[in-house]
Length: 101
Length: 486
Picture 1 (cartoon, rainbow over the protein chains, first blue to last red):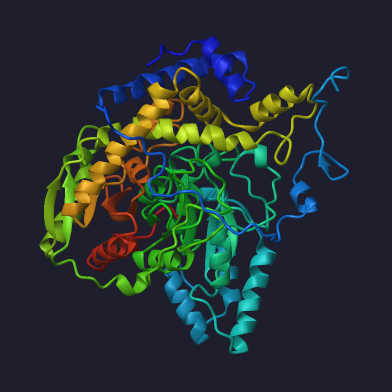
Picture 2 (picture 1 turned 90 degrees about the vertical axis):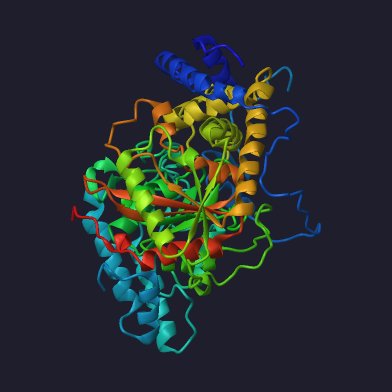
């Protein structure tokens, strides 16, 4: 398994998780997460050769239904909790810059 | 109404006309309001809605209409279960003003059965924690000793039942979140088998682990509520289409001939001697009543915490990606670009434990580490599940402690995440294996704090599991003891 987490790795992971963290958090999380990762390393002792992974305990596969129209949330209901909306859409800051738009 | 009334006795008395649903609900809300300052069990409640539902039940009764099995029973619901009334906050700042547009499956079920949801209870933010200290709002205190935690993450629901504010409550259990607080507060809590109860409307934490389950003062009420909430729901593709037994009708099955498995892995290092003695006394009693005690071996149990905290955090990092400040939830006031909107909204909206877990999960899933952490954990999960499958060929139930210690002090573990995680050492394996497990009060330690007996049964073995727990309660009175701080 990998090396303990330093602050630069913590910042990278925070970016992957889309979380803004400050310097104090980066330092704290680096030490706390390193301890947790060190603890989970004991999994290496378990012999898993030829063992299949279990993502789900039930023998489930995809569940399909007939492709027919059913009642669902209206546009108004779907937008009800939106922090910002406009004309039936979720509004966000500009995603594309002027030139590439 | 008195605090000794169970859900079963309330619904029976109500059908007879001994008292009205309005009286019951009024009494229960009175207790919420009188005890909130002491235990902080509830995040919010709606007096008017509850009373109006109660009056409706009374009207139906006087008109001779049939009433459901939970008619007039006040029920508290953990605030990560969606309701169209009030907010659904998950005890997080990010969902402070989130109002669900639909009711969870379990809410539809219990209210159709006549229950009155009277309030939403406190939890660790997004159900991540073992003490409710991770709630963004306040910490729920243990009604048995208010210097101690109620446990978590369903600490509010368990404290509400322990303080006899409501006879029954709903919680959710991803790694012990119903059973651990039930043990700490001296009440009964069931984690149903994975797939037994629909997760529709339960805010997802670890989708392959989460289950909604009942909390009550005795096994009869737990069986009653489970009968109402269990069963297939096509809106949760992991809900299993399998008949639901009448769990109350199954409780008479005798102890004689029952095979109880005991695994030394649950009685090793870290177990408090008084908890060990309490659990051992319960096992001795069952043996005296004719149960056969059979030694079993669960060699991979020792990996449960490590396995669990990789699987659960990986699933959480994926599930909580939906809180992006766009469709619902808190948005940072002045976002720069879209990336800043995501990162700032999430950075400001989530508390430290949720951030820690999402980062751990993102790391375990990230390129270069996926095989070493996440995939390895899934393989160890197979080994843990195989251990249980093998054990249940020889035994009907497995008995163990719920927790290594009784309720710890507020603040005792909150600065050390790993120590907090280890308090789940006996509960996470049931979630990893998808089996059912119940926490039943089995005595007090020398400080007067409740000790929990855990009984685990094979997947969809709730009928037998509840019968064993009920037979134990018929012979003991630990569950009748009221908390002493009032």
